Each structure stands twice: as C-alpha cells, then as structure tokens.
Image (cartoon, rainbow, N blue to C red; front, side):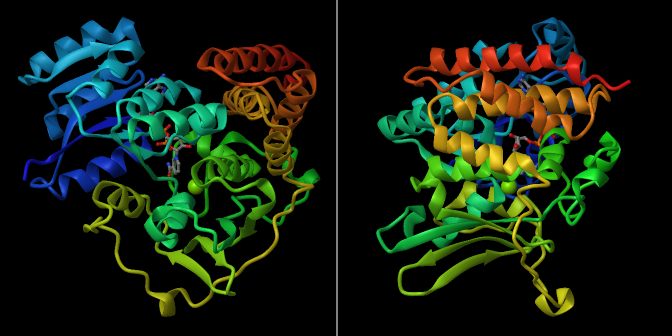
Amino acid sequence: MKPQRVAVLGATGSIGGSALDVIARHPQRLSASVLAAGRNVDALVALCVQHRPAHAVIADSAAYAALRDGLRSAGLSTRAHAGDEALCALVAGDACDSVVAAIVGAAGLDSTLAAARAGKRLLLANKESLVMAGDLVMAAAREAGACILPVDSEHNALFQCLPDGRLGAAVERLVLTASGGPFRGRDRAALAAITPAQAVAHPKWSMGPKISVDSATLMNKGLEVIEAHHLFGLGNDRIGVVVHPQSLVHALVEYTDGSTLAQLGLPDMRTALAVGFAWPERIASGVPPLDLIAHGRLDFEAPDMDTFACLRLAREALDAGGSAPAVLNAANEVAVSAFLQGRIAFLSIPAIVESALAALPPVEIASLEAAREADAQARHHATRSLSRHARA
Ligand code: NAD
Ligand code: MG
C-alpha cells in the first residue's frame, strides 16, 4: 500500500505540529508531501529537513527567495512555492491525497475550499472557513465527494459518537463541552484588566494565540456551534454547550431513546488527527490512555452567557443567518489581533463584534465573492472602531 500523501497547511502552527507528529509515527502509512506556512521561513525549512516533503509553500511572496535558498542550502529537493494561488493548485492537484486544513482564520478559506472541490480527504481544523462560508464549503465537498473529517476536538468527538459520522433521525441534540477558558467563574469587572499573556494561558489546551483568546472570550465555543451546524445539519436550538473544566469529555450526542453517547480522552489534538487520517480504522496517536481514577471527577456547569457575551453573539449571528456569521468572524479576527497587540482591552472584543453585527445587516451569501465582501466590510468596520476602543 502506498502511503497517504498529506498536505499540512499551517505546518508551523500548533495543529500542524500535532499532525506532523502523528504522520511521523506511521511512515508506512502516511507521508507529508506538502508543507505550508504563513511567514516563518526558518521554521518551515526546519520542518522540511525533518519531514522531506516534495513541496513547501510560504504565504508571503516576499519570502519566496529565502525559502528557495533555505531549502537548497539544506540540501533538499523540496520545491519552493509562494502565495495562496500556488497553495490552492498544490492542494487540488496530485501532490496530495489528504489535506490538513490548519491555517488560522479566514486566510484558510481558499485552500479549504480547494481541497473540498478537489474531493480530497479533508481534515478540517480551520473552523473559520465554515463560519464564513459553511454552505459553500459543505456543498463543494458534497458535489466532489470530499470526505470531511472534523479535527476540532468537539466535532471530532461528535463524529465518533454518530453512526458513520452522520446525523440520523434518532439524534435529539448535540452537546459541545467547553473548558470555560482561563477566566471561568469571573464577572465582567474582573475581566476589564485582563492582559494578552493572561488570556493565552489556557488551563487545559496548548494552542495558537488566536484560538486561545477565542477560548478565553468563549467566542471559540460560539464559532464551534456554527461549525457543528454546518457539519451535522442541526439548528441552533439543538446544539447545546456545557462547561466542563477538566476537558476530558469532548462532546455528547443525545439519542431519542434516552441514551447519551460521549467521547472522552486527554486534551491532546493528536487523537482527533489520528481519527482523521485513519477513519474508519484507528491508529496510534502518541496520546496515553485516559486514567479516570487518577483524574477522579468530571464536573459540568452552564456557561455564563452574560459575562462572556461572545457566545451569545455567535448564536444570534447563526439565527440571523446570511452574512452575519462571516461578519462575526471577521470583526472578531480584527479585535483579537488588536487585543493581542495590546491596543484594546479584553472587553472591547465583544463590543467591537456586536457593533459590526449591528452596523451590517445580514445579506444572502450565495457565492464566494459575497462571503469575501461581507468579510471585507466587517474588517473595515471593526478596524475603524478600534480607535474608539484604544487603550490609553
Ligand atoms: P497557530 O497560530 O498555532 O498556527 C497557524 C498556522 O497558520 C501557522 O502555521 C501559520 O504560519 C499559518 N498561517 C497563518 N496565516 C497564514 C496565511 N495567510 N497563509 C498560510 N498560512 C498561514 O494556530 P492553531 O492553534 O494551530 O490553529 C489553527 C486552526 O485550527 C485555527 O483555525 C483553529 O481555530 C483551529 N483549531 C486549533 C486547535 C488547537 O488545539 N490548536 C483546536 C481546534 C481547532
Ligand atoms: Mg474545539
């Protein structure tokens, strides 16, 4: 059997690193054939030395020569490429069989869509592409016969708890768990002075900076409700969220007969990635088994939707439909980036998202252009409102 050739998009990131770890455990079965990253040429070349892909892609075209020269001086035959168009061509062509979509933010939409349209096995971590243009991505995957394996831990858990990974008539409700983030139990006043360093220090998961802030605001759970809606086709009212600080139960499926099926495991994304690579088989991921006696207890509580307004805003955007989720996502990306740069306060994140949603009433998203337009308008609006929220 030839190894499954995998394109790892966002190779230098947290999910990219976990994916490459699982791939390296199974040299007979998996090989990294394309590695793609945003800006960090040195880190990308170092990964190429380790994994020897046929192709390496850097998003920033200005870094092309540095990548080409770096690969050459490392003595590698890996071909250098730059830009999103080159990446999409590699994803769609025969350089890979599977695609790990782990670029952060709306920047991952084109390559995710290219993988779906080309009918690839799509290990989808980039939840923002579903939030921004979920109907288009799902329709493209359906038409081309692409198999989407959700890599977000909660959605991967739901996938594992559903027969054949699909919703049947006997499913009543899906329930996502949330760790609650680093500020669980605090009130709004206590959130006012939060620093970026405090916000990215997640108690259970080690992740990139953007999703860590999203976890602290609970926007991550809001994006995940929208993601679950697209992946599994259920409405807002049948996708629950329960806070579970131990992060050992990742999601639950409630069936009509009173059964609830849950998936448990240590908080380590390699499990979800191994499921994505091997399903319907299972392969080792490097994640140790769960020792429930050592952990001792599993706690659950309701999310605090008043303190953490982002979860409420995401649910409202899903109900509003059309471009509202794309606006929510884009305004959030702008606000989170400004927060990480120390330009705005933590509580300005929901304020900026709410104001973008109020200013840009939802329009229909029937095309990629319409999704991009909604994204651009929301970025414009959110960027302009940054000055009103500027930290003294
Ligand atoms: P990260 O910040 O650690 O890594 C992001 C990667 O994307 C990097 O390799 C970066 O170089 C690349 N990148 C950024 N902009 C790019 C661009 N314009 N073109 C090409 N590449 C670009 O982020 P992460 O935590 O690995 O998250 C990646 C995605 O996976 C996000 O959508 C996140 O929501 C999702 N996700 C992550 C986790 C996790 O545990 N980290 C869990 C679930 C879902
Ligand atoms: Mg998740």
